[in-house]
Length: 177
Image (cartoon, helix red, strand yellow):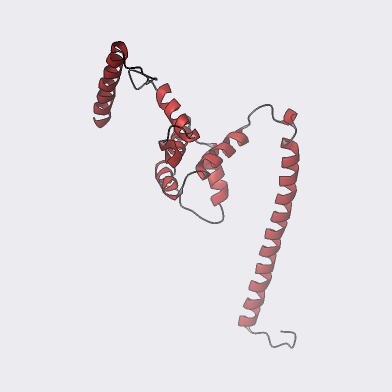
């Protein structure tokens, strides 16, 4: 091009090269800014007096963290229920995801939490944290007519256990309907 023999193809290639350099320069600037913001945020939150109440951004971040705890199949289920019309685009996907989590209803948030806890394989085991929390959630729902406890084998407790099994059976039948 310096020799004066610029063709349209050479000009287009030069335009694309300059555009890519500008784009990459913007990406590097964003990364540098992010590192500064991260450092300032980290320093800010280490001071307990700066963490006295939850903000909307905190709740949005909590929703993201819960969402990120899902495995691939859990995310697919949640996406199908919470974000069925969402199309992913590179340009605005982070902003739109932030807005979706910010605008999530209580019902959607409770669904996300419950999917996350049930999605954890540890929730199947009573002596794991996830299992214990799932069990406590289930008890708090008061679905069962009785609450299992350590049972001795006397007549009163056997009767309570039978009532509990009957109640469980009733619950199963209700769930089938």
